[in-house]
Amino acid sequence: MILVTGGTGLVGSHLLFDLVKKDESIRALKRENSSLQDVRDCFAYYSDSADELFNKIEWVNGDMLDTDSLDEALKGITKVYHCAALVSFKKADKGLMKNINVEGTRNIVDACIEHKIQKMCYVSSVAALGSPEESGDTVTEKTTWSPEDKRSGYSISKFNSELEVWRGIEEGLDAIIVNPSIILGPGQWHKGSSLLFTTVAKGMKYFTRGITGYVDVRDVSKAMVQLMDSDIKNHRFLLNADNCSYEFIFKSIAKALNLPVPSKYASPLLTGIGWRLAYLKKIFLFQEPSFTRATARSSHNRTYYSNQKIKDTLDFEFISVGNSIKDVARHYPH
Image (cartoon, rainbow, N blue to C red):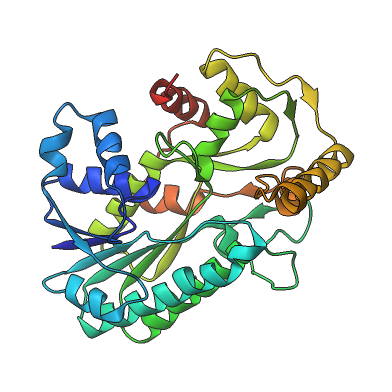
């Protein structure tokens, strides 16, 4: 039997769909107050038998910080997919991310060792990879992570979470780590990377020319399943379909949604003013800014990610970013 943590998230819900389609016996860990509607919606995007497939999942309540609930969830389990994580770029969430991402991963790793789990797959992020030494260099699985680089709290939490998995490997756990770039997928439109579609749909006039990597959520799930079904272990794999500019992404999303494309270039000076105005809004109107200093800076960075290792290892072919955007847009609620 397989255990999936974070099954209510974007990656987790797609992974559950793929595993259920394979007729695997699945148990999914969720918090007691978590809604399962996003998972039902995800299944309905891809199948006319969504309810029938959804009902094959055994849902159990638990918490990554509650070791007793993890012990209970792991009874009879042979493989674990650890997808649960908090994604935030707010300074206020730094401590919470350390708890959920780092301590939570430590707990599940320890529990997997205790229960002699055959194999674990951990969903990390490109945020846990190093930065290129020179502009234009491509980031690979071997690029060294340095705390001296300007790192977000999220990046630090994912790097330290990976250290827990590597520590588990040293203690005898067979594991795989995947490092997806920005994940494109339908649903959960008001959080995570799906906010790209919601933001453009609300009317976006500006774009920047920063470059980063993107990958379809279906490819993330597909790669995880293939790696877990193989004899491959104790490796990390960067999952990235292509490196695209924000200009290309925003304009492609607008076209796919049949909306006017962003037409004004937002310079570093302009985005600098933007995040400061957003911060003032927080102070005077008590509203959390969606545009922060970190997001303003990253919108101009140009980072290129390699996908050579996963392509060579599995002969893997990625869905193009352009096709991914068109597919996601079809499900966007107009």
